[in-house]
Length: 584
Ligand SMILES: [Zn+2]
Picture 1 (cartoon, rainbow, N blue to C red):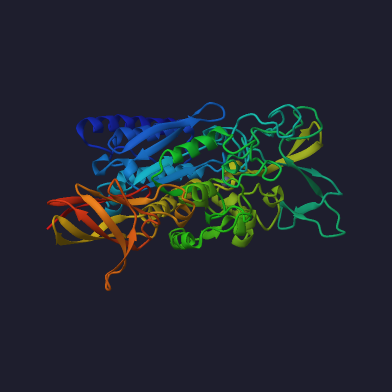
Picture 2 (picture 1 turned 90 degrees about the vertical axis):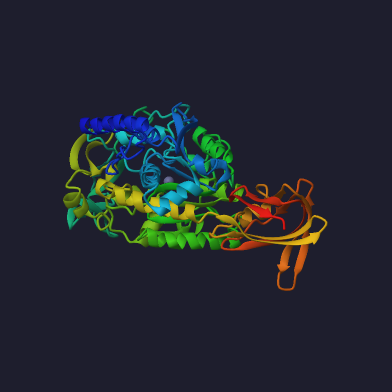
């Protein structure tokens, strides 16, 4: 952090503290979204927001990382409108892949935006009044700091940092890449070789193209910068970590030989388990976003096709929100993981939807700014550790971007190096912030538009109201009570997946302060047709399928009581709606 930034943050903290004392909440914390936050700055910023908005913000530890660092969640709720667990909750995480850092800034921005705009815009105020928010800005703080502060490339470390023996030689992390030229990034190594498969690109000799069949080559690419640290004849074969926490969730998990990086068994990685436990502890969570990079995609599952497609009723909800997302996020495409990207077993989004019944998206943030590949091609290469070739091949790299937009900051030109194993080689290429993450001047837009998509999804979570009540006295203290429960948003109060597989308890309608004798659902109110439903001794009826999106359920109740009763519709994921009804 620069001295200027430290000063600004200190001032913000002092002002926030003053504000908290005088009741001038909030307006004082100013965060900028033109740089990436390391863990220390992230936590300080969240704490400053908590001091400025103590009524809304809770910061809570949710577990430890593989190296023992704290994992944090932020909970936003307005207690004046009810406890968090009685409202539909929206969950966001980012950065489970350590190198995919900008999801953290989007998560932080979403918190910041809601707090800053509460009381200013109708939308932010309503959302913070009606919903609760559960946000884990970084699932992988170990690799986040590694990525930001140490020499690495834009594709690593994807893993956590618990030592892991990738090459099964009995040693862990003994031979990772090395920053041989000391430029702060791991770039590429190439060697002159008349039998090589590459030659200088005639348009720009810094780039290379594949030789045509029968043509003489000039270069061979030797992979990422590094030496044979452990003297086993291999270079860079076992770097930091080496596993994948987003392949370790408990739905459709597959062992390492099917799904590389999956771990020994589901939830064996500390971070994966902490996140799953946190979501399980908040069953009111009804919407999830898990941020990754890159490729400009709004992903839904399934991650693999072996266990079938998502429920068609629920797909309508996904399509409605996902397609609106394409308009909120120009250039992003709403697509399905297994069909349009690649197969993922044991990912976050299948766990939260298939096991927990939560409507879940995963945005692949940002198109790669440094490439001129078409979107079609990008979608195939996105996120997978891209074939290293594409980063040096001509025609795919937009050198104007590196030379004239970033003005050289994220490119190291080839320079000679004496390598202990390979002899005379050259080192150079694109540096770690030159790919997959947006340049500083575009980060704010990534944050705002993706926060806007999250808040749109959060607004489309179920929004229930007891809509219409008609009371008819039948004599002897008996009343016929017709009631409708309406949902004014696209998401049903129970996903079809949850209702059909009985993933959590159903919704229920309770009569308080009177006796519920019998009940029926309205089949046809014009013909007065009802169908009897079982009533529980505790005066409620189960609503097994919940309330559909933009729909309603209607009941006719036979109630015994005096003066008034209280109707309570109580949904795990849709919150609680109540109405007092006069019996007359
Ligand atoms: Zn990822």
